[in-house]
Image 1 (cartoon, helix red, strand yellow):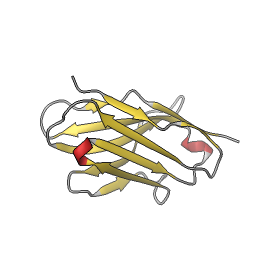
Image 2 (cartoon, one colour):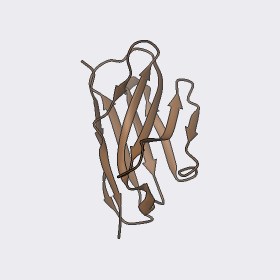
Image 3 (cartoon, one colour):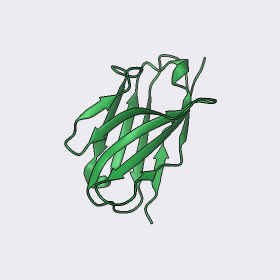
Image 4 (cartoon, one colour):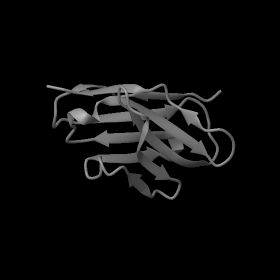
Length: 116
C-alpha cells in the first residue's frame, strides 16, 4: 500500500520561505506527473504547481515567480520551495501523484500559515 508522507509546513512571517516535501512510502511505477494543491478555509482546493515526467513545470498565476516545484524521481519525492510568502498563501497543502497506470495518490496535507 503506497502512502504519501508530507513534511515541511509550519508558521512563517510574510516574506519568509518554507520548503515542503512529499515522499512515497512504497514504489510507484512510471509516475506521469506530480502536483501540489492547496485548500484555504472556505475555499475549493486549487492546483498550485505541476511537474510532469519530462520535467516540464507549470504554476498557478498566483505563485509564479515565488514557488518552485522539483523532484527526485529515484526517491519518488516531490518538493515545493515557497519564497516571498504572503498571508493569502495560508492553506493546507496536499501533494498528488499521478501514475501512468492505475489510481492516483494524495498526501494527508500539511498546514502552511503565513502571519506576523
